[in-house]
Length: 399
Image 1 (cartoon, rainbow, N blue to C red):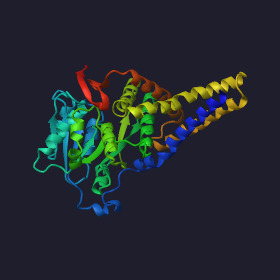
Image 2 (cartoon, one colour):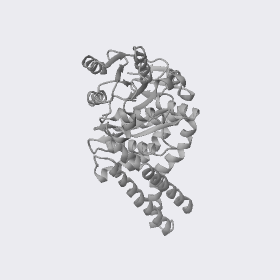
Image 3 (cartoon, rainbow, N blue to C red):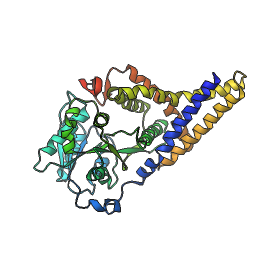
Image 4 (tube, rainbow, N blue to C red):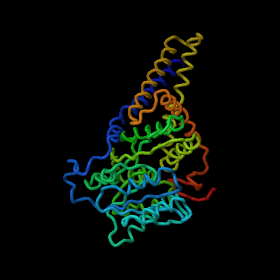
């Protein structure tokens, strides 16, 4: 039995090490940020940049929203048209959208109405696309961004470049959390997003992320993305599945990395957010979701096994080498967790970061278990009944 338990500890360290090391160069490149417009990498693209329509769904009035949207509108990308989309005129984000639309001639505000057959975010995005396509010169590329992340200058250029080079069916960026305090839930949020970001740097695990995506308008229609999104719960995972079915690559633009300032994060926010991410897999990629059970088990169980083996050895219930294996796991695991702190430019304090890492490993498994019994997907003020393939069967408003 001890040998079996030690093997689990070894597998867990291999999993943690693989994620921490294989995705490291991807994170470092993301932290460097976008390259300037005159960078040699863009030399052959001058005069070839396609027109871009940027769709930004908006909801609520988070403290960073106005600043975040401003950074997206201030991109130095040539020939950019922006659609800011809210669900209704009573949404607090509507005032922000109207202010920007009144100030900038290339910015337009759209009221999408309530979603009935898909997620509200997707419904908003489709309304934004419809507006852009009704213009005299519709954009050649459709780009999408969330409204709460800070966009460094040059972000949009990095996101579109692989499409100009004809390297991709679609392009995705990602984001990093910039913790503004050292409270446990805030650092857990930063750690969990960092973990997902590391996996984005591993090709077999990488997926599209809806907070920063781009696709040509031609591909959007030719391959049925428009029809897919009219009835789906999520944009990015459904697009990933479609790309896999078609055998087309989704390129990960490492430098197209948005920044998400976070402060005062709550446990309820963290658990709802992570549970929702896992539910997307359950609905759209059920095979991956089931296989992920092993991964979550290897993340959550070994810390308890290691402590148990050590205590058992002290009490004479297990061999000395089994107790030593538990100590080695805890030591190496702590070193791996500590090494990830270097990937956060804000450099959170070491002890809170280690605690946040441990809590994330353990509680992520709890979030995964919750997805087995979830009957509906909750997102904002909406509750969705979702069927196979992420198809929305019913939408209810919960206030």
